[in-house]
Image (cartoon, rainbow, N blue to C red; front, side, top):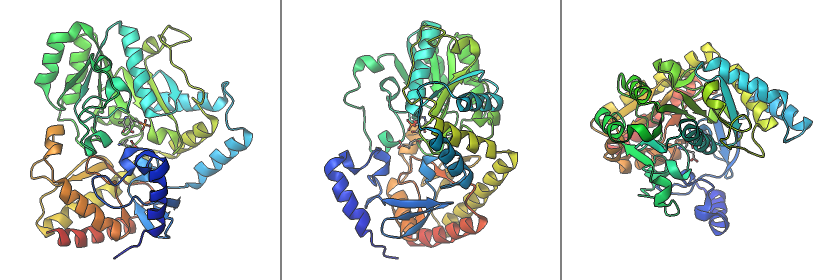
Length: 429
Ligand SMILES: Cc1ncc(COP(=O)(O)O)c(C=O)c1O
Ligand SMILES: N[C@H](C=O)CCC(=O)O
């Protein structure tokens, strides 16, 4: 069970000299679980191999995009063919139109869509558009929800901000968040109070329809419909950040799963097929405010990059109803197995989920909001993470993140994961 990580450690030492914290996104550091991040040499299907030659069953899947697994042959072929035709043109291509049509067809609330290179850009642009379209200033967001790292949305954020316990980010001025109102998730009264006080000036209420950057915390029954109602009554826009949930929890995302229609939606991860591509969209009436049609400026040198577009389009086309059924079935099997493993070990956990999006909270009670997530036992999560890594299972290195299964995982993989979790849980008890 002792695994040497000599080459990963050596690369990490080199990285620490030239890259802040040795990583290009904070969640990749093993900050809250201890040890050295594994430097990956290659991935295939559900597995990655690190530079020391160890193979891991991967449950990070690039933090969500790789819903079909690593180096999926159709995606590789589509990206390669696109690359051979040219990597970027800075002028429109057919693929962009086809990807926009594919999104619009799957997500009825979206009549028009603009492609960006990251979820952060999509969220930032959607908020700017909401402000421009309504002529209002304020944004309501939820504690523990993460919409990327643009200044106005970084207040009380989840993901790495939560993992590292960063209270507020230096460099984000008070002015930048002065119009951001943060409320607790699943709390109706707090939202009502925010609208009672600022209703005339709220441009947009943004949420992850399933919170998945503070662990996975689904909305209480009827909560999304409540948000739809109150925003509509006050003339504010409702923004669903479906960067995580889009094309994962259902073909049409969380809005299809819960039957609630937002005004604006952001996408990322799955829509880019593992390449830097994201998007935001909404009704034509709202989207017409964007330049060049309207005055709200938004742009990007590599937006709609043809290689990323080819990969994303191929991935979306492969995700039919049967694919989601299979994915949810794999998640069912894993979730049941994990719950049993911890029950046998006498360890209290709550495995929270929406479709195939889930995580394990070491907590006595279900988690409904960020404050609840913060009371879960992160030390125990870290010990579980280390036990699983040593057995060849690569989980996200934080309880504030979701665990991702892909269609490349097999039932045998899931059963092997459950067996490893059973051993690890027995060690923890
Ligand atoms: C829900 C959500 N929104 C936005 C983002 C930001 O996307 P990106 O990392 O591509 O900037 C992420 C992930 O990082 C996310 O999970
Ligand atoms: N939780 C983040 C997004 O989903 C993880 C990705 C990152 O920030 O690197």
